[in-house]
Image (cartoon, rainbow, N blue to C red):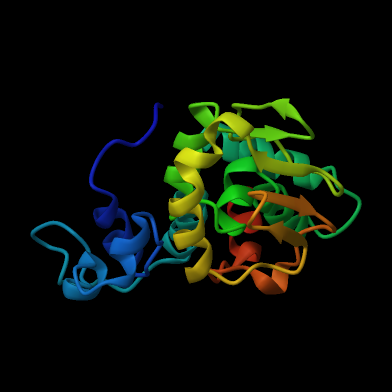
Length: 207
C-alpha cells in the first residue's frame, strides 16, 4: 500500500480527534475536525457501540496516521519493540518518536510531520554533518540534526515561525540561530504531543 493522498482532515474526523496533519490549519477555525466532528460519510453521524476489536483497531490506525507510517513499517516497529528488553509499548513509541521526520517536527522545524518528510526528502537536512534524505532514519542520543548550509536562508523564516508554536521536548536541545537540534536523551513518553493508548496497539498485534 502506497502513501495516502486523500483529504487529511477526513482522517482526523474518522479517528474523532485532531491529528494535526495540516500544520497551521489545525489551529485555526477552518479545521474540519472542529467544524464537523462526526466521522465522514453519509452514515457518520449515526454512531454504533464499538466492539473490542474496533477499539483496538482505531487506536492502531490513529497512531499510524499521527506518525504517517504505512502498515508494513508500523508492523516492523511493533516486531522490533517486542524484541526490546523492556515494556513493548514504550519501545514502540520510542521508535516512532525517534524517526527523523518526527524529530524535525518536534524540534519545531516544520509545521507538520508531512511537511517535515517533504523537507527531508528534498535534501534540506543533514545528520551529524552527513546528508540524509530518509524520513524513517532513527535518531540516536547524541545525534545532531541541522538544516544544511545551502538551505538555511531559504528555510530560516518558516522554521522560526513553526518553532514559536510548539514547545520543545526535554530530550532535544535546539539552536534556532544555527537551525540545529541535538538529541540529548531518549524520547520521554510523558511528553507526547498526542495521547496514544499504546497497550491497545500491542494487544491488537498479539491476537
